[in-house]
Image (cartoon, rainbow, N blue to C red; front, side):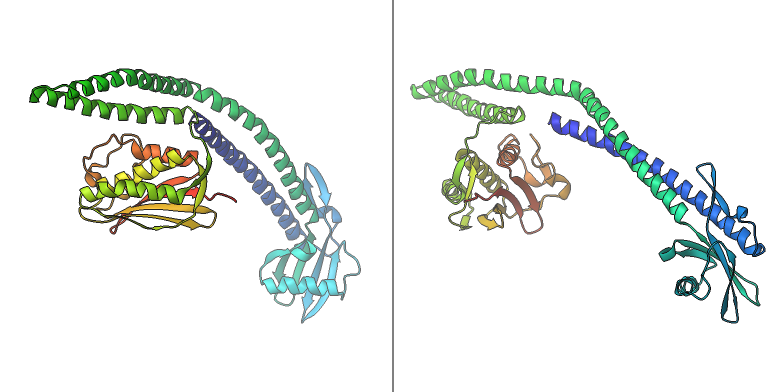
Amino acid sequence: MIRKLRLQVLAVCMLLVTALLGGMFFSMYASAKRGLQNSTQELLRRVIVSDPRVNQGQTGIMVGGNQVQLPYFTVEIWNGTVYVTGGTYSDLEDTAALRDILQSCMEQGAETGTVSAYNLRFLRVDNHFFERIAFVDISMEMSALHTMMRSSLQIGAAALLVLLGISILLAWWVTRPVERAWNQQHQFLSDASHELKTPLTVILSNAELMGSVPLDPRPARWADNIQSEAQQMKALVEEMLTLARADNMVRTSVFSAVSLSDAATDCALLFEPVAFEVGKTLRYEAVAPDISVNGDLDKLKQVISILLDNAIKYGAEGAPIELSLQKAERHVRLQVTNQGPPIPAEQLTHLFERFYRADASRGEKAGFGLGLSIARTIAAEHKGTLRAESDAESTRFVLTLPLLRK
């Protein structure tokens, strides 16, 4: 629990830091890109309105505080004929490269744009009698942006590593009081459960002795009441102790190859008369044979018993209870189904909470509200899952466990 809380705190811190650094670097990159694009656009505007013999000093942009000269050229199109009118390129007249560049430029149909294949940005001006197009090389611009991106990623990675260490220390420091309170709570729960077991055993023993001695009806009935209530208290203490051990990571299960098919059938045979007494039938024909898992037989039987007991208690009057067990790829799926009023979606997520009782849909039945919590704890110990589903037709509890690898 505490480890999970620390991971959540760490994840939140790192998400916030990553988002902040990402936003900063993105803003810097976008600003630099916009500045370089504006510079080349300004250069194109100067070139396209100048004399073809323009001084090459006008064809520079500022990169990193330095004036950088950029290759450029201009063309004029008269009645479909192309003339190279100036620039720093040579031997462009009537070449395949020039035709490809102009074709890409014309296909875009825009006043300005880029020819990616040749790393060029262009600007077009229509003078009615002819069209003039200026091109400037943007390789330097792209290189500067790539260098900036690479540097930003390196700085960001280094910053994230440093902040990860800080976040780990922060998560540990923030959760220390929670861990201390959690340990104290569970130590108290475990100690209290152990301390209560002894007097309860004494009460039960004396109540049994009183019940075996002939008494008049009233004291005998009182002895029965004492024994009944003490049995309930003992069951509660044992359930609390089970959860306390699970919270403290005390593993009491002994794992081995277990036939889940036999375990499910045994539990069904045990609960069949219980269901019959309350006017319900228990169907378990859908339990597939020869399905095995790696687990603790007693704990797995406890899970199945909890689910069957739950279904019998809360199923609709006279409606059947169904137990099924099937293989599903690398897992096995055990399902207990009962008919009855659907459980609202907002209550389904709380069914496995300790002491939770969904009054509207589940009524006031015997029990402490710990059974499903224990069942989910055992499922997690077996690297499985336990979930609840409910609709207008039925309520289903689905246990999924890894299939035993042979």
